[in-house]
Image (tube, rainbow, N blue to C red; front, side):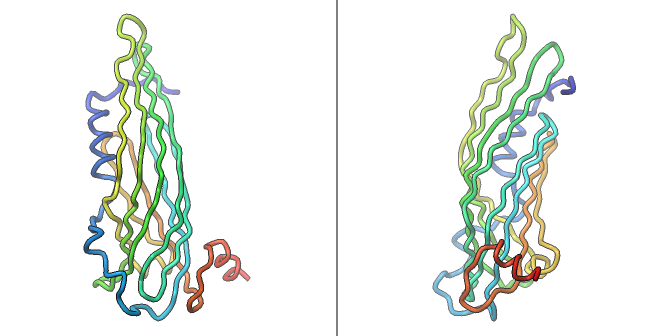
Length: 205
């Protein structure tokens, strides 16, 4: 691992990023849509939601994939996922910076006609992290933090892009964190709810 100096403001920046800047578009659950509304789509859709968490200091990456189904009322059902991540970095003066964590991802969403047409998804993440910086004596443990909480900023995926090559929403900060979400969809059969794996197998025949 490389030897580098820990930026002075990295911990506050990480905490702010986790609390606020994981997503680019904010859609309150109260404004998404009425779950009792009538049919708004001519087809059902199936697909995947893929998330990547990439960090450069310390260096690590992790990902998770979820199955997606959209009914004719525009309600988006997404399977749950769990993700673990972590890494460490050797710093100047013999210090070691380590960051580990877990996400419990329980997303949900709706189709919104816009304009533009888009899929609004609340990521609904319950996160728990452990951040430490341990240095040789006499300093010892310089940082020992365990932030946790819920992330539910909201994601807005372009509907047309999701049906083509996949719609991407991402956010980054100044200390090397990048969160990238990708939504891919294909047209399903009426009233059919199947996994993305099954849909992919059918369309590849």
